[in-house]
Image (cartoon, rainbow, N blue to C red; front, side, top):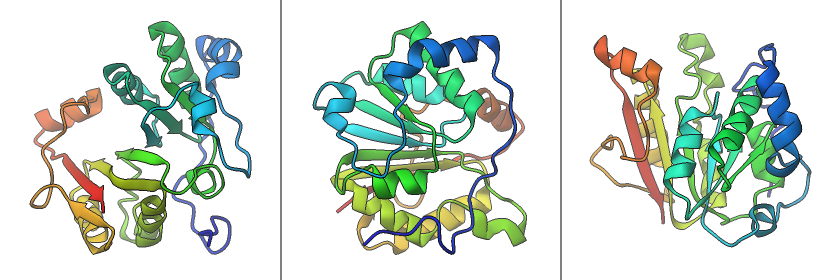
Amino acid sequence: MLYDPTEHRIRSFVTRAGRLSTAQARAFEEQGPKFLIEYKKEPLDLEQAFGRKAPVVLEIGFGMGDTTAHIAKLMPEKDFLGVEVHTPGVGSLLKQIGEQDIANLRLVQHDVFEVLNHMIPDGALHGVHVFFPDPWHKARHNKRRLIQPAFVKLLCRKIAPSGYLHLATDWEDYAVQMLEVLSAEPELVNTAEGYAPQPAYRPLTKFENRGIKLGHGVWDLVFTRK
């Protein structure tokens, strides 16, 4: 049964206007044909998309792509599928793919709910990363947050047994909600007592470094699929 991403769902993102830089536009032209996958309402053959059989990690909402590029280069034995709706971010990561010669990355510019429902086969993912999703910090907007029980249940369908889900946020109340939602999902097991130490593969962003210097916290959660 599909979790319908179009009916009765409040969108967890706002499509912001943004201009492509000349370099980003060039990256779309030069790297797009190979590394950008068109959204379709049909299952994606991951082995064909990457040209090999390897564990696939889904990166949700990669922003400008710096962290995704870093992790993909760090783990050449794995393949990474990045999903992002904002055009400048997609252009930025395509630019980095070209500049850094990253072969194990593919991108989809579309709503992740629809990508998961229609393109990702059940049990196909080795892992899922969701780093610093929009916190929708006003209480009346909390219902727009991405990490909700129905979405986590959908992710569990797509993650293979023994695969993992890694979340990170710098908003404490969102971290509390994330921990509650993930702990309540019967298919997931926490790898830590509460929040996890920051895994070595996740780099500190400039924004995160600045926040740490100001005394702000960052919370990582790493759960595995039964």
